[in-house]
Image (cartoon, rainbow, N blue to C red; front, side):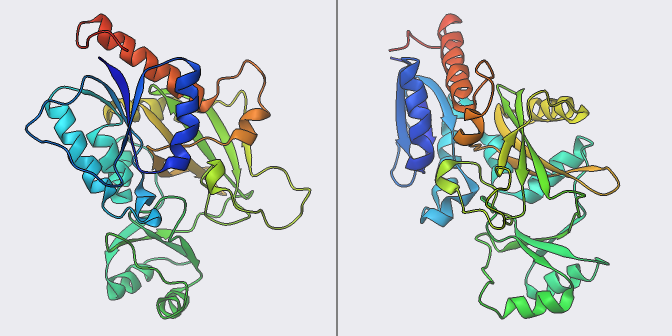
Length: 318
């Protein structure tokens, strides 16, 4: 019988979603892709599939889970299974180069960026910037591998220092550092391809901005400072429509998209999270009738399952 199949590799990030599915009494099956096998010649089980594969899987010793997930998704889609955040989503999740190319094709501005392979190429790319720049991994997640450099000499010294960590796919991005008037970025959440809410994220503690409770780091500075994550109720921006169109074009249903505004007032989009997480403390401060992240995701998955059954693509859910 039909179920909601969750493709995942991180138990901590999956447990809160499971609680929401159970709260709605929705049938589900967990498929842990941190290891395993499947029969490529078989027909996949009936149901709706939701991929929660993350670019940061390698940081949890699941180095090849994304490649395995990609293979599973290709198999599912070849049999016509409905995959929420399917093959296009995982392609963008695993490559910021692919993200930026797709964003630019949609007319969405991104920071000036030079992909580079190898140390000498990175140094040459760094020379293209007049001021500070950021080196980041092409396949990152959780802000891992993101470093700010004031100049080429600082980059060169960093290569030989203790902080250097090679990217898992060998590819670096050299990117212009965007100086914001205030130290925050905005993360815009979407469920079912539609705007859910926006979050103001304090950047004073660094580049690790994962909102999940399991990712939380201790903030630095004043203990009385405002919370790191603050949901911006009533948020509006022309970017909402642009992002919704982008997600539709790229067949992505659930995502968090991050942008920063520079001193000239330009909004520059720099990250798409197709395995998005939500901050429970920030949601607890919302008004009682405001939509929550994981409850919205669970509700959306339930509607997808119901719709597939209604049109005869699946047998009754159980």
